[in-house]
Image (cartoon, rainbow, N blue to C red; front, side):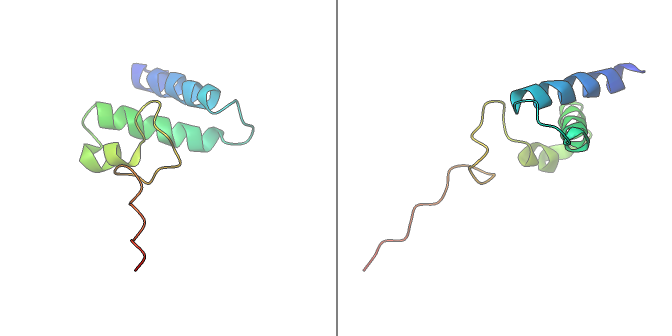
Length: 74
């Protein structure tokens, strides 16, 4: 296993643990870890970084910031 694959494996494991060790999501975790590592290495560009929530971010918020305010009633 090369260094990059080892970093992806370790990141996927950390994602799995952070999400409560769910069963059956290993491929999703591997893809997310790969995207994060690629973004860190500059291979994914700004779009890849925007797709990945920051560490500790609330995953229920839409990407790009806080939820929009509700429209005023009138």
